[in-house]
Amino acid sequence: MKIDEIPLPDGTLIAPFATKQAHYTDCFETPVAQPVSLAAFIRAFYTQPLFKAERLVLRIAAKQPSSDDDVMALAEGTAERFAVWEVANRTGTELLMSDRSGRTMSWLMTTPDALRFGSVVVPQRTKSGKLTLGPVFHSLLTAHKVYSRALLAGAARRIQPD
Image (cartoon, helix red, strand yellow):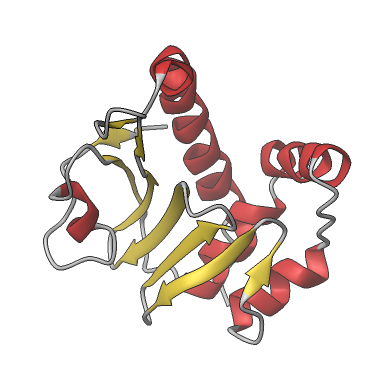
């Protein structure tokens, strides 16, 4: 499956973070043969086996359980929270979720011919006042990119029309 890392599209919910000092942003894209609704993308993304493994870790490590019913409510727009995330913003084609710490964000977007997934990592100030993402982030960046591609591919394979 073709997954490309692309520049953040202008005018999207995630785009403003790319211009903020020391913030990390990324955007991955895969083509689709027909338009996909945001609700269908949300359902496919958060119920795929790879993400269900992440949900299990969050249930155990963060004591934040989530279910497929929770995903359906998020997809339908009737829930503002899901596991450790809260809806930061939403449009008809985009969903921006922030974790409760405010340090990371996840973004989903549909276009007529593609699905997009991106992330934001918000820096912290050191004691000296410098903004930094920290050594843990930098050590995990390659794994993050591999995981992001795998999540987008897994969701694209599971897409079910509305």
